[in-house]
Each structure stands twice: as structure tokens, then as C-alpha cells.
Length: 102
Image 1 (cartoon, rainbow, N blue to C red):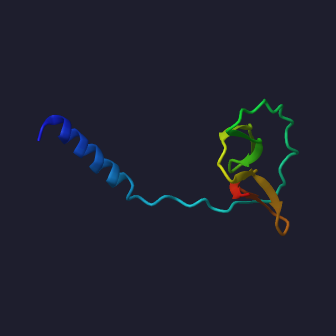
Image 2: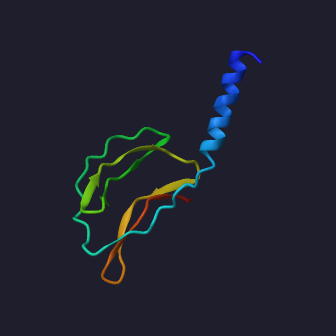
């Protein structure tokens, strides 16, 4: 086996081992204080094939931090549902943004 084939086999093996580790699930986080009002963002012109994902307040474990909006590739037959905070029994939880079928 030549060096190139050996290197390729090693890379494939390393990638296979790396994927064996468990991927952590996104835990549901509850916060006792509601998020600040959304910031006003100037939405740029978005070219066809792209959609605007609006900014949102994220919780970093100690406080809310603003995550600015940005363009993402559109998905045919789907629309983007933005991140949102929902009040749930005197606590707040984030519903992560996701793609929904049209």
C-alpha cells in the first residue's frame, strides 16, 4: 500500500472513531427573568436562495446576550421559524429556531 492510500485509510479510520462519540442533545433551559425587548435590526436585501434569520436574545448561563441576524441558505419547500422565548409557569424557555415545511 502506498503512502497516499495509507494516509487516506488513516483519515477514514480517524473520522469513523470521531463519530462514535455521543452528540449532546440541546437541553431545555429555564430562566426566571424574561428577555429584553428585541433589538431593531436593519435587514439587508436578501438574494434569491437565501432567507434572513432575525437576531434574538440567547442565555449564556448568567445573562442574556444578543445574537445578530444573518443570512442562511433557503430550503426548498420550507420556511424558517425564528428563535423565541416562551413564558412557562413564571419561567422563560427558549424555543430554538427551526425549519418548517410550507
